[in-house]
Amino acid sequence: MPGPERIPTPSNGKKDVLVHNWHLESGIEYKFPKKILFWDETLRDGEQTAGVYFTPDEKLELARKFDEMGIHIADVGIPAVSEQEKESVKRIAKAGLDMSVLGACRTLKSDIDACIECDVDEISPFIAASPVHLKHKLNMSEDQVVEKSVEAIEYGKDHGFKVTFVTEDTVRADMDFVERLYKAALDAGADRLLLCDTVGVMTPRLFQWWLAEAMKRIGKAEYGVHIHNDFGMATANSLAALEAGVTVVNTTFGGLGERAGNAPFEEIAFALELLYGRKTGLDLSKTYEVSKRVEELSGVPLGITKPIVGYNAFTHESGIHTDGVIKNTLTYEPIQVEMMDGRKRRFVFGKHTGTRAIETRLAEYGVTNVPKETLLKLQREIKLHTEHKLKAEQGDFIERYRDWDENHKGVTPREFWQLALKAGIPTPAKARKELPAR
Image (cartoon, rainbow, N blue to C red):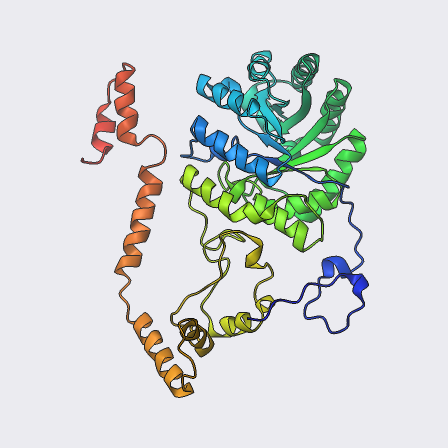
């Protein structure tokens, strides 16, 4: 198979290039920082995915893998959550990793004390900022939020931590309050400011406007973003933030996280390298291997059509597509599969298969010079076989997956009431009626 021609940069002067990359050739000016820092959230926000739980050994294993890839910062958990979580964070902090180990904490001295006990490199005290959170969750005034935030930052700095100040739901807060709160954080000694789209409501153009306004008001600082994927725009909004000059981006492997997840590491890292031509300094060859391990340990399957690491990301069936890819992979693959260890291109034989894929498969086994009419006959047989396959097996798989999703995440309803009974709470009649038969 012929190798792909490299995507040219604007300066190479070629007129016979096979593909154009307008990110580089358009002349659009981006405000990328000199160095983009990847802050991984897999072990904290990723673990908050419904039904996901990592053991201390698993957390340490994944932290080592992230470190090997060159991840710059990793939020490894909230030590105040439990004794086991504290032990997990402590083990990672003492593992001698090159990346900065961060402990998350509420704006409470007791939470920061737990981080002190774990000897992490930095902390990220967080508090909510939007009116709905202040009124209905925290029952706090804006003045009280500012006061608690300043106290936490000063306490963290007094204990030698690098401090990133974080607010939940920043983008739905009043802009005047955002300005006031973050200026107070800077005055208190915060080293970095993290701005959050906690429920994924931003769009790229609006987010760039919002960031420009917020950063202009707050002033010079190292900024980061934490973006959720509720409307499917976490990657686009993260890239928009980096284009606007934000230095730090929060990501998780496979996009793990609350509800629809967080900005996926693999999408942002590969987009920066291949579309914008920005060197991340990360070892992206390990992306697939690490993603598969996160899949195994989290119990959350990688999506079939998930970009880069999904099962179908380099899979082809259509005759038109397979013919193009066999001739030159750049026709239908903007990412070269060889960039990742263990990742392979795959051709599926089914209803849409063309003779080129059949011919290639036969040649792999030494069967060559097959007459065209024979190839066409085999193509017809494959199509007929596919179209007459019963879908019972497929339906069974979907049914089993749905059952797993509904009944095997976290504690099951039966287990809940068994545990409640252990705690001294009898099972009510309504619950006994709703529980499925054994």
